[in-house]
Image (cartoon, rainbow, N blue to C red; front, side, top):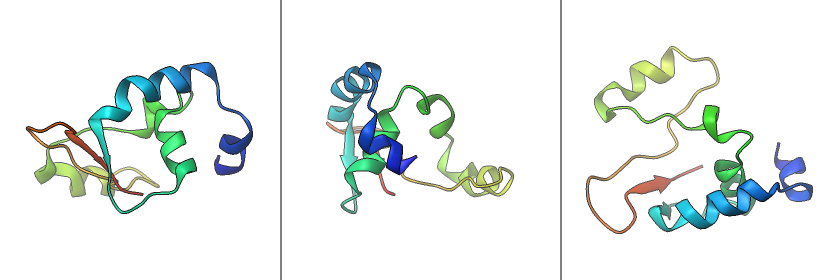
Length: 84
């Protein structure tokens, strides 16, 4: 996915990124291509799932290959945190 993200970025990705990136804090200096994949309309439906923090570990343990990549915040200019 990373190799393809560098070469092919569909138009929907740009509009998704323009719309949602202001809400996301890039914590930990994530690579640009990982951030690109987070906004890609071809993967974003299955890529991110929001769940209550207290339930996240149990949820991730039940989905092969899943991992926690960030957390939401109740208030603030950037309520989502992206960590890769």
